[in-house]
Length: 382
Ligand SMILES: Cc1ncc(COP(=O)(O)O)c(C=O)c1O
Image 1 (spheres, rainbow, N blue to C red):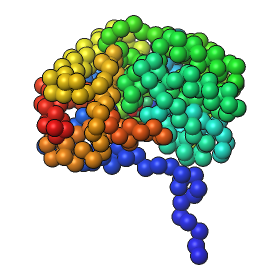
Image 2 (image 1 turned 120 degrees about the horizontal axis):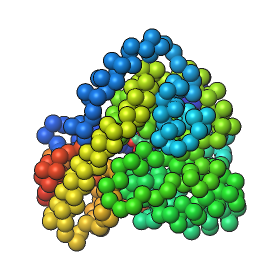
Image 3 (image 1 turned 180 degrees about the vertical axis):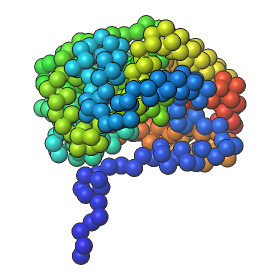
């Protein structure tokens, strides 16, 4: 009998149901609220093109760069985060940062705590290193710190606690200052790393910004990305962490892909450092996402009334909606027949029963089309 094709680590990775579903919802007649794709109209193609021209004037732009990232890009990210350049490593999207971190810090069987519902890309990287994954609920205040305390008091010793601190994917919520403080106190007491996954923090269109978890402790590794604020195709993300963590990650990065794209990193460096342009661009993005979010919320009230339970998002791209009594997975083919797509909550579940929930993205469709999408959803869910 021959050995199985896939390694135990690969066999342990759950396929992303979302990617499979996206194929279904990508049909042209379907108004899709499924993908977490930035508004196509807001991708700054002309500014990126100008930055690419400028970058190409530098003979180094088409060469390999340092594994930790092109110096100009590290400096621009460090400036924006208000940290030292030595504390920043530029990755191929923040997904690579997650993947390298999991390899750098977690041995098979070590415990990693994730939110339930979870960002599936995080679940996959922790599965790939054969972590012992424990999921705790995430509610309106962010990660459930009471539940985490119970787990720790029961003797569980995680290596990592992962969360999306701002405008959680998929749950839409933001961790309160109190939750952030409690997570940090637990990390200090029990000696785990907090991975603060934060690609959406710049997209706040309502309410007050809350200081990052990373500003509260040295036991935090913060991840960020150019994907949601500039363009996903640039594939530039970053990790800000203590230098001893970065040294391990940098070694693994050499094994993974040697280095990132110098050209992309120089483009991002220019755009992040162009403060007047970036400030105006982010303001446009926030205004447009707020308008889209408001259109979605208004349509949900109008079409589903009391049947839909949700909190109004304050930023980011997602609204998490519970419709008690439905099975969102079973409803999806009917919804697609009605010309609307979403991701069923179960696709993000680790242990929780989330079958009556769905994730709606308000980022990709215009306000008008979101209104139409929700009326189709209302008809499908009758
Ligand atoms: C929470 C979270 N982290 C990380 C990523 C990865 O983004 P990227 O690799 O494009 O930076 C995403 C993408 O949707 C995300 O939602």
